[in-house]
Image 1 (cartoon, rainbow, N blue to C red):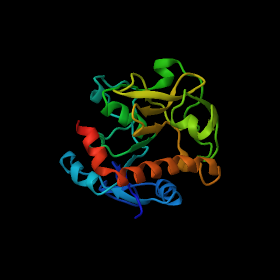
Image 2: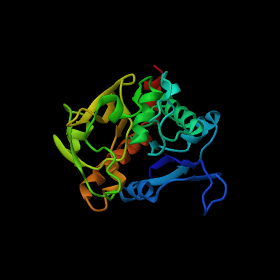
Image 3: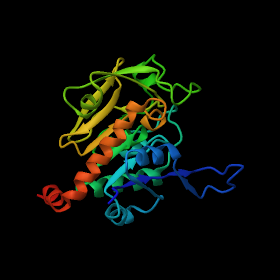
Image 4: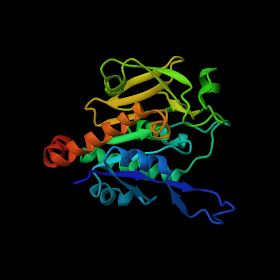
Length: 253
């Protein structure tokens, strides 16, 4: 049976010319294509209430949290600064509830860009609201208008965590962000860093949570090696499906 990967959707906050209301949930096809090419069945989870998280997580084998808006800083105990971008508290609260429910039943969680940041906040960590202001970072971590599928800077993987196992010690990646992890959340480890010290990947102690700050969904079609990241997600989902009772017992013991 094909492993089901739930992708938490983004939410259109402001009306546009095409959609004259903001009642639109969506996800970029690149995430869907990444899951499909590795043998998974993508299921888009529309924005819901935190109380619905249990039912959503029951229907999938693994959770993917995608990119998007900045995370609301009050969720990690900070006041917003002027450089903070657009936020969506409803999305934040819903995705945090998905993370907590997936953790409870020990289902794999994979985060991309904002997804990595949201996971960190859900586990009690904090963020830099703007790395250029707060850290004095000079590297361009938002490469726009350079194309999404063009790698622009190197990262170095850490120890024997998941990203080093897939790619070795050095990796050239793309970059579209201005927020980043500050204090790590509970049971999370740094799996890769940029040359200027930004956390580019994390992994939990048990390996069931893993994330990247860059965008492999934009890279794998022109740089096929990045497909290994989605392969890793599918492998985790398959293992979860084969041992659901064992994993649930481990999560509540």
